[in-house]
Image 1: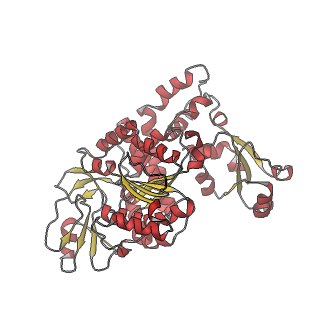
Image 2: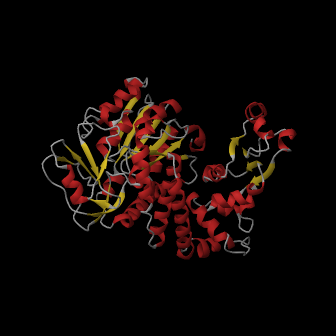
Image 3: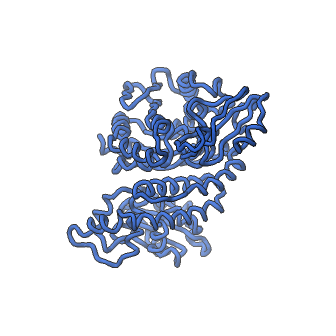
Length: 489
């Protein structure tokens, strides 16, 4: 993987004090620092001489502390600090000296892993005009490179899943899983990533109920704290809610965002992962048991407006809109835009994830999400792109009907049981999992399908949501700051 390659190239395996001068903004395009952190390095972003001396100089002098200082070429670093650090100038040229750096820099972020995999298997020189492009066509973007890379990466992801303990661990695994599933669809090979769900399910049942208490600078952690998080980090913001968008879908849609400066993170959807529950929670800053109508969406706009008011926005500053043509007025500074394309595709595709790949590829090519985002950035909004829930590929195990059963329209991954329904009968017949009522109204009982199964016609291949598979629960949370994209103006 690219992060491991950068770790080795930097000299980190043999050094305890590193100065990484990131010449090409590689940190913004990759997650390589997670590898340094996994190897025990304390990550420090250099700001200025005084701040570093006050906060980190003691760590610099401690022989046992592993320290990675991240700087840019324009940062002034005094000699007494500089001499204590092993310098590595991180650039596309230093990473891939046998390729044309300008060509690599123009490639999609998600393709950098594939480039790294192919580069390490060849010793050829590709500096001549057109040679790097030929290398990409013939050795990188081919099934013969993508399939072994994906299978090797899946083994690493499974190893990580076995020891994953925190939501940050699972955010990384979910992103990796999504990229691997995209590769399998793009290059036409079979890759079964479903085993990851077994470990994730154990994590959810143990830790989901504690996530509301977590604080993180990069994400609200759980969608029911999204409004609070955005209002604290942006004076003027727009949340684009891509209903039903999974990390898999974003991995495809994001390819149209090449050149836009964005920060990738994730958030945990509410379980059960259905629209009426999780989207209302995202827009209201409430958990489901605090919603007036958790199983209906008739009060969604009201919940959003009430939340915005509580966060300090006046009525004239609040707008709830739908569709890519959303055009807020000049006074608006707290905006929600609902986009239904992903969820509509989930409930319409006929051939599972492969069909979803084609649908998302067409949406990325159309560029409507990018156009909406750019329009809002030009109006001065910080733009957040997220989802109420994701989606997952399933095989039908049969439809559920009966007195005392409530299921959300078009979602066949969960069952809500009133107190007089026969829970044990449903569990035995459909092998459903009981979900503890964390954040949910306590007067009901909740049964969820196992990963890969849905309450559809027996044997039918569908995309669905409502359960607790990784693809449903961990959704993208993308931050795009207006001040970091001034070039759009």
